[in-house]
Amino acid sequence: MSQLVVLGEGWLGAAVARVAREQMEVSTVDPPLHPVMAARDEAAARALRDFVVDSGASAVINACGLLGGEEGSLQDANAEFPRWVCEAIGDLPVRFVHIGSASEYGDPGSATPVREDAPLNPTGAYATSKTAGTQAVLAAREQGFDAVVARVFNIVGHPVPSASPIHQWLTDLQALPPEGGEVVVWWPPTTRDFVRIDDVASSLIALAGPGERPGVVNVCSGVGLAYGDIVLALADRLGIDATVTSLDRPGIEAVVGDPGLLRELTGSVPPMDLQLLATTAVPGGDAADGR
Image: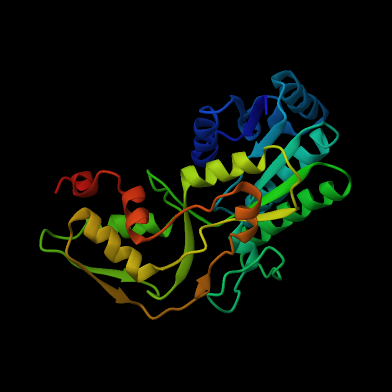
C-alpha cells in the first residue's frame, strides 16, 4: 500500500493514523468539519475525490461517526455519511474500510461468540444508525465498490472517552474516600468483548491491505469480560479498595465476537484479559489519581 487516507481525526481516527504512520504515508481529513466537504453536495464530492486521488491512496478508512446524540444526528453521521462517501468515491480504485459496530447484533442470547453471519437485531438509535451505515456500504459493494465493514467491538484506550462505561467506573472509583468503598454497576454479570484501540487500528490497517476481503469482518478479541470484574481490576490498578454493588438491572447480558475470520485474514487476533484492559485504561497505575 503506497498511502492511506483516514476520514476522521477524532479519538479513533487519530489512533488509526498514528499507528499507520509507522508503516506508510497517511493523509487525514475530517469531512464533517471540512469547509467544503461538510456540505455533502457536488462540490463536496469533488473535493473528497480530489483529496483521495491526489493522496495516491490505495485505501480509505472511515473513522467518522457519533456514539451518542439525538436519533437524527446519529442517523446522519452513522448512516447518511458513509452512504455519501460511497457515492462520492465508489468508482475509484481504492479499498474502503468502514467501521461498523458490535451493537448491530443486538442480543445474541448467550455468551457464545457471534460470527459475522449472525442475525442482526439492533436496539436503540445508535445501533440502528450503525446498521443502516453497514447496509449502505454493503449495497455499494454489491455495485462493485471494493468495500468492507469492520464490525468493531468495545474499544478501550487512554484517555477513556466519556461514552464508555469504563469512564464512569473510573470516575466513581476515583471519587471514593481513601479507605475505599462501593461502586454501583447496573448488572455486574454483563459481559462484553473489549479491544485495545491500537489493536483496533492495526486490524483496520491490515484489512485495508492487499488481498480479497468479505463484506463484514468482526474486529474483536473473542474474550468476554464481566462488568463487575472489570471494576475490580480497575480498582486494583488504581490501588483502591472497592466492592461492587449491583442495581439488579440486567440488559443485554453478553455480546462476544468470534475473531476467527479476522485471524484468517490478518494472521492475528487482538489479545485481551482483565489486567490488559486495566493497564490500557489506566497506563500509570495508582499514580494516575495521585494515590
